[in-house]
Image 1 (cartoon, helix red, strand yellow):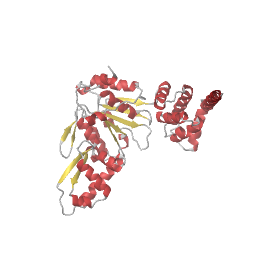
Image 2 (spheres, one colour):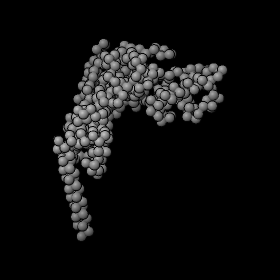
Image 3 (spheres, helix red, strand yellow):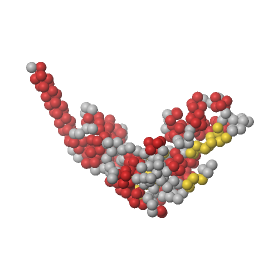
Image 4 (spheres, helix red, strand yellow):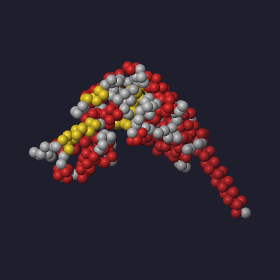
Length: 384
């Protein structure tokens, strides 16, 4: 029995073709973590235990610690369609619930800007499968926050330009949260700690009750039994606040996401980049670990994480000098402040890691020169 069969929560459920496409497919580079197995097991074990059911998970850690990757892996293991919502400071209740828009006549539609016409046309023609924000993001090529703002501006413009004409009808467009809640998807809620409005957090809190419901303008909907919420939040992200106590209270399982072990870091970097030089990767991973620890101790806001390791290793594999690319792929991502960079460099020197980096660069050059010499010798031998 494979891991997907072992942990599928509703194996008899028939997903539509579109929903099946939303269930995450693990790439060959994916490595199963202890956290993934632990959460999958806890969810499966408690799935039919009523009030003991585990369906709201908190993943709390620094950027690059693998929170979103883990949320997607849970989608694959549980057999649930994956979707996400990225929270922002000025979210209001319509971003949690959805929006009501008037269906206006073609004559009034033609008086709007072309981009606004395209948005409304796409909304009117939607089959209800996609949320309003998702449609705007697709049509306009904007972020979720920009889509939410555009929706509010569009609603205001349509309502104030109506004159004496009455809109024929109003149509409700659910949010991504409501869509996942009603259809039974795995929803990743990214960074709810940035939300400023307490009323918005209260609406989110009520949606995460195991036996909860959401009051929409058109109806009251109940939580689908397959709905799973994965809250991902960043400990050191600018603008975040401590996670709302009421929201934290609705969580049934929490993982503190830190850098994995060095062995796992190397294994994932190999799998992700195809670069197989363990000697070099060992030094690169040590440097990431020391930089991560040093940034925390000195309250430097940036983070050295797995993403930095992947891009750094990939650059080295492509022929970049490890010492030079250290700054462009790792250190400058953490900070560009001269004093803070000095702190990071001192930490690496203290652990002998800059010298180790110089050594692996020399070894790489020797291997490259040996390879070039061997190729040259082979070429000469063939000519003779």
